[in-house]
Length: 116
Image (cartoon, rainbow, N blue to C red; front, side, top):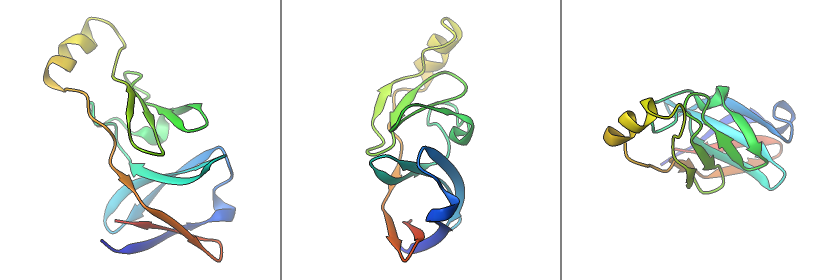
């Protein structure tokens, strides 16, 4: 694993998220009231872009497609894909519940770096 500079703290206000590239990986960096966190950029359900998802709580991101929610601090799946009923039930038979991959984040002199 290596540390990759991705953006400056000035570029990512509290409450926002930013899609970045770190070591050839697409990573989503979140600036929450609790600090900076980084996860994989796509939902593990059907690879929907979490950058288009919404923060339903300060540290909980919701997938824009099927409403799965994840804690960005730990990657833990809070609620697996649950919408629309029927269709998602079929998809879930093939795509079991998964957590997000998380990455360590450091800040040095205003520079945010992600370890990938």
